[in-house]
Image (tube, rainbow, N blue to C red; front, side, top):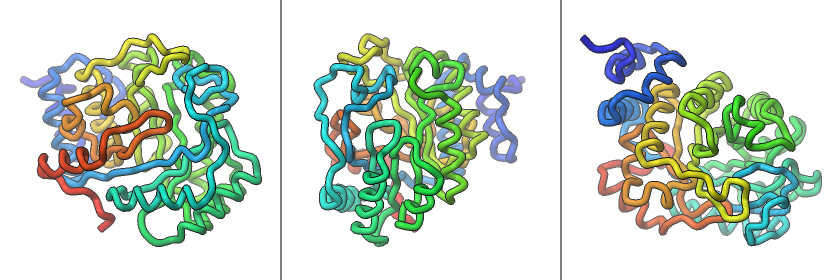
Length: 325
């Protein structure tokens, strides 16, 4: 007789519209990895078919951030040798947008460093969005803390999605950042929903949290009812407080993705930062673990691999790239 919290039993419950409980999700830490991935993959296929979504970003303002996030090479408190520059021009942003579109991304994100932009910078971002035009792929922004008033202006300009990670579970957040609070991050997400955005929010794994806390983060995202969940895996950067953090194993990463799929069966789950360096030749397994999307073309301060390799991997697996239809 199968246990009530076995992957198979939980999978059957998910198909009937039953939510996985916190207790049962935590119990998945000790189940066999093969069974877990098998049923996570079946949940993905049930809700997302064989369609893979791609997203791409531009680091539109880099470094000199006053926050103290332990993992971040862009913090002014860390000496990491990254490129530091102010907000780039709208022409550079449009060029990155067109490149993302060419690479078959379904969403393009404009990302800036810092807790919040100056009013002048927000206006420049709005100008860039209008300059790009409403044609083509979806547009997203990740600008830190933004007032509800400016969110509305960004929405009117043509931004469809607002990205703002919780980064870490509430119970572990003060070990990662002390210059702003978890509650502030939640408030920004709630405001973005009020402004009418689709919301993209996830976190970084490998920050010293345990499995139970990863489950905690998944349930927080479920309560906030975000639309897509970017899952990043720490790539320790020399000069940051987490430079010597122990990397998660491939199995730990795949198990985390799978459990998120059980908890968030209908949401878009993207694997983003740390994919190449942490998963290596096992990158294709993210889809078998339940992910239905990934970031391509590089990250904020670290490069990715050639997009052609990602597209070839998707094709070889028999999947298709989502085209918005």
